[in-house]
Image (tube, rainbow, N blue to C red; front, side):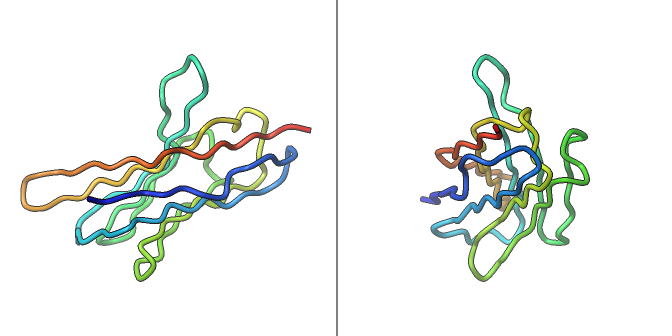
Length: 120
């Protein structure tokens, strides 16, 4: 069973930076996508960024383009979300989601979430 553990959240002032990590206990899929989502109370979970392998292509929500960067460290089974120029509206619980593909089947996993608060 794959377990995803997020870390790196916390309180930061507007304009500051944080780096979130998503570490997978075991992940044997050679084709997969790892996404970061965020959610605030009363709103739907929002896709923030994703990275797909093989190839390493990335995608971002318009609201974070140019400020957030998603990257992966395959030997460590870890995906990072570097968040710069943070704004109060980035405040949310951030969740890591991994989707592994094997033949025609997909397997999705979620982390427990990490709180990011941007406030002065």
